[in-house]
Length: 57
Image 1 (cartoon, helix red, strand yellow):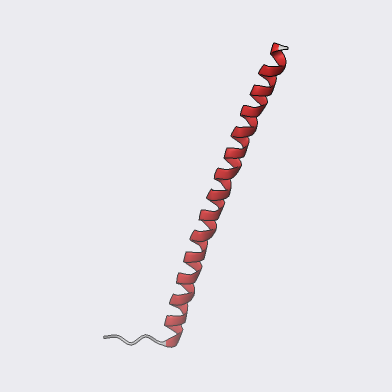
Image 2 (image 1 turned 180 degrees about the vertical axis):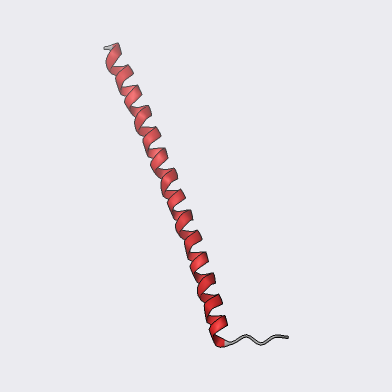
């Protein structure tokens, strides 16, 4: 079995840590995007209902 040097192990651990944290960042961006989209849709529906209600009076 091949023995790895300390530098190789450190580089591998840094690479794994960086790749895992970037996945979390991307996941957070998509979660934020979903909530922004939900808020926009709710706002548009509220605006349409307001305009319909105002048009009937």
